[in-house]
Image 1 (cartoon, rainbow, N blue to C red):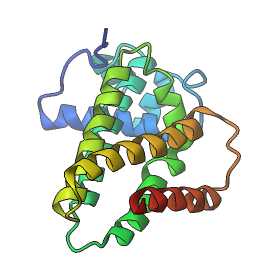
Image 2: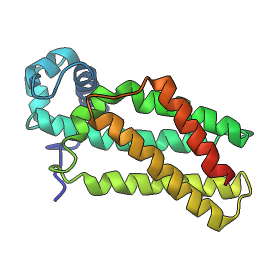
Image 3: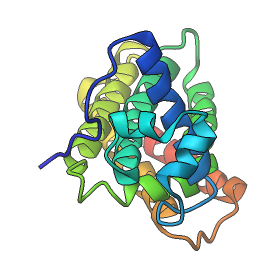
Image 4: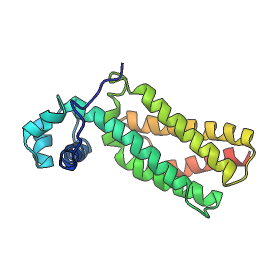
Length: 200
């Protein structure tokens, strides 16, 4: 069952600003430290809010990390849609920009993503994770058909293969602490794979 990270929803702008500050502070901390080694007091200090303000919205630090999963999934999907909707991009240009997207949203945030996504199974977020990935696959499929005039069946197959193969590698890079690639080396291999899939 999916747990609700927030005790109550912030309705006024000031309350929303407090929650945003808490989540931004947690993001900075979890980019450098593990969830286990930090405290709600540390998060409150970094956010510049009182500890009472943290507990107004979050029962504990784990619930803050779970809220970050929800925010990250939504933010990444929105950013992908924005990328795919850019006008006048050739397909090779889209491939190049896709890897800049991967740099910004995954490789540069591996330590942070590892800290929050280890909570996905116990927080009931696996269904949400796979649903967002399915939505991302549909967005890619739609782009291949509508922008690049690809055959719908071909686009469905290629979008499925591309999304799941690339995300499988990214999942592995997030989960494992020993990552046997420099990002440029992995990027080169993945680009070759993506081009081979699209050209087959």
